[in-house]
Length: 431
Ligand code: ATP
Ligand code: MG
Image (tube, rainbow, N blue to C red; front, top):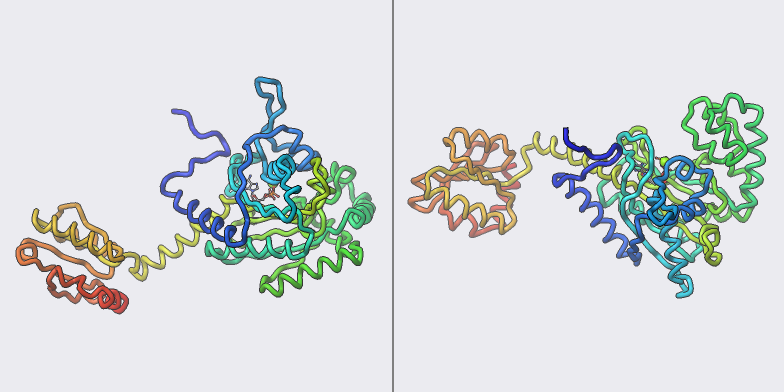
């Protein structure tokens, strides 16, 4: 057998590319209207950037990075996410010095060594936004609203926004102490990863997918009880803004980011239609990250979407639509059948004229007997079949057969398109 694509990677084939382009086009347009600018950063960076920018106690840095030494003995990592590179670039190019708020977006391939399954790959694609330089609650609401707009324009349904606040560093320190105090007596019953995290990064335990750990967490203290009045007020304002925008949300006190530079708002958008890999968009505020990576103190907020998961959802919608269309017989307008040299030439010309004025038209090019062509016309889902034989070719007419009623009549070819609006209306009536 020949060489196959590496485990966890996939080709995006020509028949799928339309969905990718559609999603990218919708995002591009939505982001342009909101004055976000695209940025493209390198696919690999110094390993150190991700260790500092994502955090050594995270799964991503701890076990998922593609890290290697290049021929000059530099420690290099294929980017596992987009934020660290964008922030590095923001600092390196002094975007902060230009004043004001930088609204950036990116898309591209990301790399993580994970167990591949539906919606989870080793090379996958994200599209993300970062708003750097605004600590305003409106920035939190704006990025969430834009994510919602993009997902809605793609046509996705059954999405829920999960929202939480993890407060400021002091709030989190207090919560951390309370959580350790609560979990320590249960330590033996936690899953092994969570046991390690108990001292290193206890907030991440809330993320555990282990059932027994989750059962223990039922009675754990809630971060929302540890927010200072200032943090709480901020969280209330974010919720009020979202309500104003008509964006419903579920408050989920279990939703966290385990690292010190994350602050206040965290959120995820989940789909009911994806099974285990349900999160299509995840983000939050990270007021400490720019400083952590060597820049000046800069508040920031952003999110990333997983494009493979969006493509899966878009395909599901199309499949439902196609099976509905097949039942309704509504996918194309005309199916053109013909036989005999002269008729076949005219059929092609007629199909082209119909297409040019906007009718979806399929031309049967088999040259087979009329009977076989009619069967294909019936299966095509067209509203009408156009028939050209020797007689029609001789006198410049065409038979039009409405497939729902079976009604058939002859019309002069040049007259078929003499009143396009009327023909369009007739197609609607005959469906
Ligand atoms: P998960 O809990 O699914 O592993 P995560 O917290 O690691 O997600 P983020 O780092 O927040 O994910 O990435 C944002 C989004 O990117 C995810 O919500 C998901 O849609 C997508 N994503 C993350 N990892 C993968 C992957 N390996 N394959 C495909 N999509 C992914
Ligand atoms: Mg992950």
